[in-house]
Image (cartoon, rainbow, N blue to C red; front, top):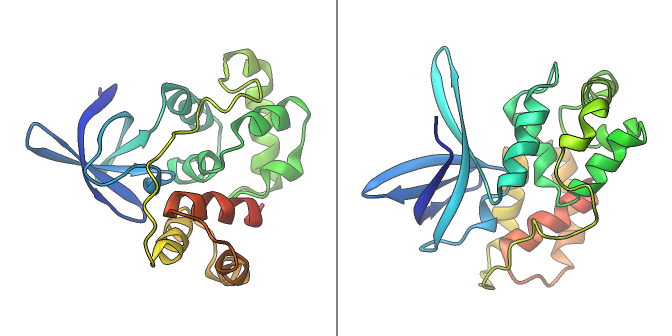
Length: 198
């Protein structure tokens, strides 16, 4: 129904952002909310999913991310939460490469993705790999963000990773390593955390 929302980001929370479009605040669930900046005007590509008792908007920085999300949802056993967890990794080209190379171990590093589901992803998407974005090692999906260092960037990043489905024990395991990093914003901590978790 919706292709994108263009408006002001009025709230950035660990699991979602709020996009104000002409005075209406849309709650949009994203893989890494901290890739967006409060009070930033942005175009957020969205996918609306309607279930029996809820309607949810899922948001993406680029159209390619949205296409990848849609392809993942078409896989049996993959729901929106698992698809978002996969998209939270910035290595989208690596994902496509894992599908091409039958690399089950790469896919099982994501929360909620077991061996069976990983094999299903490969089975369902291997013949459609030409339709998948991010086939090269280009970093066009990375958004250049203004750097805003805040003392609770690490705490926000850990909350965002938990919202993606990573277990608290795994987050506790990487917390000290992240504390040793001197990163400038929450999005950078989320990216670093995802690398450590994989």
